[in-house]
Image (cartoon, rainbow, N blue to C red; front, side, top):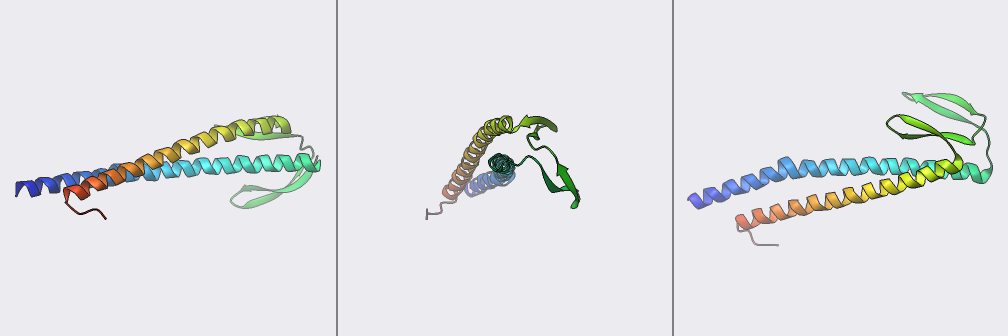
Length: 145
């Protein structure tokens, strides 16, 4: 009888570890990777826009700018040769097109490394969950499927 109770306590302990530690860690890692993927998309879009401006020789244009809360205003850009790029922490730096493309390349490489790190972390957490679930299965003496 004590052996059954001891097994049940171990199972509850492992289940608690999975539910209170590993699953929240997994959700957090996935959310962080998605955030980095979104940043990567923003820089990719910016790079494509700069390349289009260069390719088409656009030196000025008019655009609709979102002021917030889906309120738009028409904006006139008289000189597109220099742009401001958000470099993080609320700072923006004025770049020429070539400088911006160089910065974007460096940033994209860093973001790709971050994505890879989060992907490995996610895989490790999933492996830990599987390992603990396998341990629970063995404690309960359930045959493998």
